[in-house]
Image (cartoon, rainbow, N blue to C red; front, side):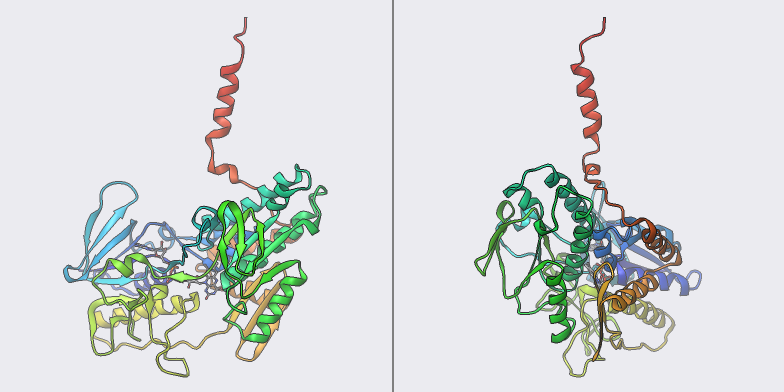
Length: 445
Ligand SMILES: Cc1cc2nc3c(=O)[nH]c(=O)nc-3n(C[C@H](O)[C@H](O)[C@H](O)COP(=O)(O)OP(=O)(O)OC[C@H]3O[C@@H](n4cnc5c(N)ncnc54)[C@H](O)[C@@H]3O)c2cc1C
């Protein structure tokens, strides 16, 4: 029996494995997914996790619950040696070990792009993983509690200042959602005034949201500004040492929370530790039929999809364009990859990947959104409803859909939870504090 090894159980890997386990005949092949995380992250929900509108756990789709016919390996692939059909797995605990395969599927995704800007590595936080979204929310809620107990002054001002760097999809969505949370939260703090909130979105280019055209992009800027957000266009972050933000426009301010959303970089494992073909950006070279390689030189038994790969976009109106890194493509590529892989096992014909975009839909905070499909643009509440409707339908499995819907439904009468659980990072503190109190007690007579 052949072994199909899938590197990465995110969007593309999850859908490949899910489809394979449904379609494989008994004894036809064994499927293994290697991922250090036990879940697929539904990243489009992360901005709503930031705002507390989606429970963090509901953005994490359990691999063990849903990939029941698949073997799961909790570990990171550190090297792919396709010449010897072996990967090296680094498990969470224990020594690295080799794992052999017959067919490899590389769906390891991308990583957050970092730039060597002073202070960013120490101060900033990304928005690509569930723990980051939770931490962003907790940091804001904690900052409100701290600021409420302080007199007006620099420290209080810093605590109420938030900076997002990067005006792409995830930056704008995260910014809009956090701004909406902060604006509603301030009403619960009589000690604070809405005018004290200082929210900055910093973008190096002259516009945000490159996924939409100019006019809707300008509307998004105006909509954020109306709600009190400061959008800095043509501005680069020069320094963030100790939370002191310095912009190329000459503006400077202290910011408690700095969220780094400047886009993707190639997965370092794919870029540096494989003998599969890689392009100049460090992306896996993949053909339209999702086999690794070029039109005239396919690499046998190697497949790729998702954000770690460069795949020709056959739906584009000009040649030489690759599919953009998004979930719309990753899901469909995963499904087609499984179909084509099965076709090679059974001697069938392969289909090329062609997907015409369904448009772009983004949340800008509770009750506000934007949707664009070619020249059709919908803004505000209807677009936000479309955003929620689309994603609750798109999140895999009915179990997830119902959980997310239940949280949205209970938020209508009761609102969002507004408690920071940042103390979960230090669970022993309360216990040690109690122990210290006891140790300091005078002996009883
Ligand atoms: C905040 C945010 C909002 C977004 N919203 C949208 C949206 O509304 N619409 C849309 O279309 N797209 C959206 N996207 C983009 C979309 O989520 C990604 O394009 C999609 O997740 C890519 O899928 P993937 O399978 O390639 O990678 P991922 O989903 O990132 O999965 C990669 C997997 O590989 C694993 N992995 C990494 N390295 C290794 C290794 N060495 N060994 C083993 N496993 C490894 C990772 O742990 C991960 O599970 C959003 C992204 C973000 C961050």
